Image 1 (cartoon, rainbow, N blue to C red):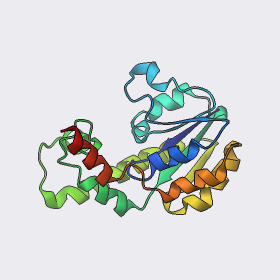
Image 2: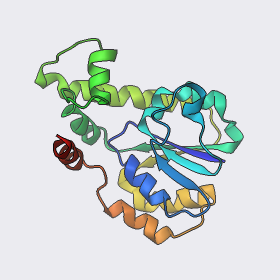
Image 3: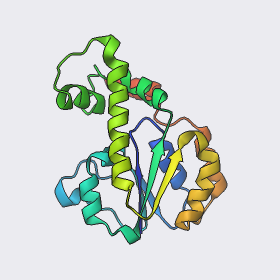
Length: 193
């Protein structure tokens, strides 16, 4: 059995994975296969929970590779405007792996956007990824919607749904910690030079 946490990003995917580290009968990872190509990109071990927002661009491969009866999907979301606001500040990012730079310049095929259109572009990104995930999950038997704003109520439901064992209280405590905030990311980039 494997669990894939699908999301737009900027909605608690790191926090969700950190909470899952307190599960003893599954391994958990965040973007663990991001550097691999082709079939190696999907080489997740059994009894593993993977949280990776870029999986939304590899849904066909996930669907082809993993048996629906043995695969559980969580659609992790956060309020649209909060996610868009977080992403809007990243459109002109110099970070080489910026998904917003890739989307705004590579997918929408425009090198520069006026700053006043950044929020609109970010909303379009959030809507596009959300639509892709919804369509992929529509006919899958094991799916769970997980709004981040309801994490403390829903994580115990998730825990039971997958038959998790471990320290639920420690897992729930992770949702009180800010992981991977925009400020943290920028500070790490500045420190690297």
